[in-house]
Length: 346
Image (cartoon, rainbow, N blue to C red; front, side):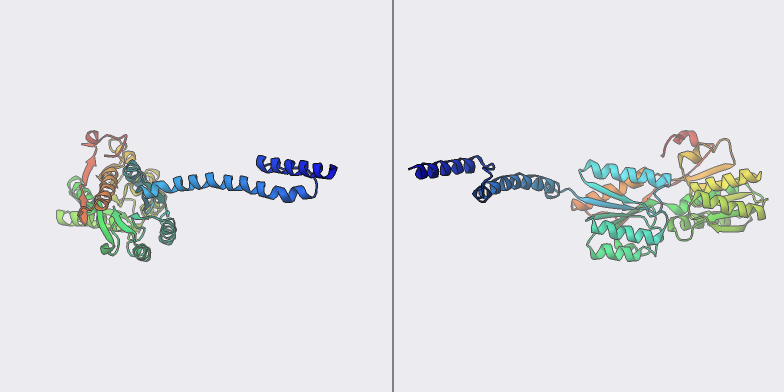
């Protein structure tokens, strides 16, 4: 009788333990019987975990897209403003922008683009370090079926791009050359700080040189160096050139950082050539009235960024877009700088 009663009590205790879903006694049988309850919390814990996973995927299913961005030099104030303009458009549409800076290194740019492909970019905004050197990366983007939109600097083969928006770079250099010819009617020796691998700078340099040639004024380019679009490199190159040619009447820089580097070198050398740049950056505009910085072929990174980003969304919406969208450039000097201001980009 006692055995039957004990058996009933044990069965009742185990049933209660199973119902409660928690551990029972320390007897040898208890852990074996407790295995079933242990499975219940595990299943209950897994069920809620499935819901957040579905929520994490929701943005993609609702149409959220991943855009990629690459430019030749992300530290250049021009590209800082341009990237911010693109980002504003992308994020206002509820999408994501992955931005990488290759630091003017073509191989790094290719590696970074490959990385962005692996991260699932669907649309790519492209500005090449080297117009031809970027082609292998464009091939990778094409193979991954990533649609490409170019800005500011053309790639070696424009057929890769669905659309391109950029300044009229030739004109940006041309207006500087015109101004120099008016201000130095007797001509003289000049220095040019270009960047042959950057198509935008090459176009500006060609515009500048052709403007002074068409002016009929005799200018002699006595020194021409690759400044890589970088202020520090430009300072070093200009210092060397000015040591050899201290009597130059002017220096043309392919962008504003180059012009600022040349300005620092000329100031240190105690010479005062007229210095021209291209960008219309706040830093250069602030110096136009009181220094040897004479002018800048101004462009608008804000307009370029907004234009190419909005063009991408038009294309996504099924609209036909222009293959090439030129953005106006113009000269800013001490005479008209107040019209554009010095505390930001135009």
